Length: 397
Image 1 (tube, helix red, strand yellow):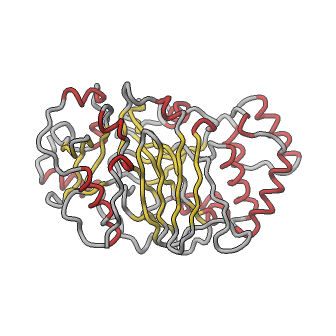
Image 2: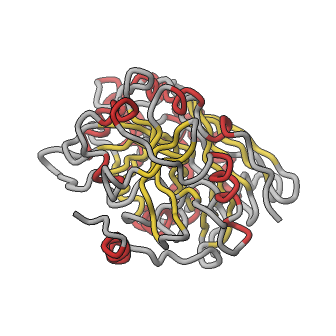
Image 3: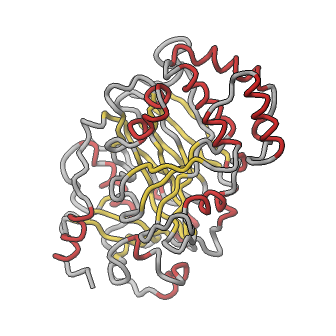
């Protein structure tokens, strides 16, 4: 059984296919390995003559002019076939042609947490309830009433932020999460290892012991080794709320599991048609469709982020920390689903089989299905395998 493929323009932004530049990665069954590609209205084109890796491609100066300078050969496949093949992944077997991978490879995958006031509130709730969803509603009311202020208007590191901290300390409600939400230093953590992220159509993983978890729809910036922000994509920072709520020291277990990081469908390169201002104004929508008919929807407005994207990039890479292969940077989410699913007052948690769709104008759509991390295909294709495969294909020069 296969999913009915969505229209090409539901997956890839029409403007990016016609005027802008969309680059990504596909798995080629014939080559038993990945290929860096240009996604254009006329099909999927091999960019191996320019770079064997996405990390290397994003280092190239003048990348935004590729549409005018690159001589295309015959396409690997059509966009329609690429989408159809990608949607076949979760049903087992090997699709007959290329399918989408996460659009990054050697880049480190970092993430910023608590960059929206609403997410700061939810992290405090997780901490105070020690990861017990049954206590979340009451704690949400307590914290909201105690704050009695619009946290979204408070600039991190400002005098107003310092005053909020003093007031919260007096109420015994100050938290390590509020410190990174309103203090001078942002939370930046390692989300996943290079090559471990999954792409459009793949299954994302939750830990089998987790009973309170959720997707986190986010904008993901592509940053090269020089600290230049060269493009953007969409991501799902799958999160185990109960694990992190029990202890912040369990952040790695809450965030970094097999299949717990999805990025896609492609990277839209910044150019005259798509800039950082499009990121700053992005409206990221989330739709969850459960196998039992459950539905939940929400959105993150990047206009409500508490720190500018370039500030977050600057706090991640620079004189204090270098990334010679570049990085992908999740910018955080406003969305925290609270709709009751398992019973009154228990809020939202995933079920196996959930379909998660993250979309934003100008970015496209990222679609994944939820399964247990130990039930989805294990991650086996690492850096050593990548370079062995590229060498066999004569792509290392």
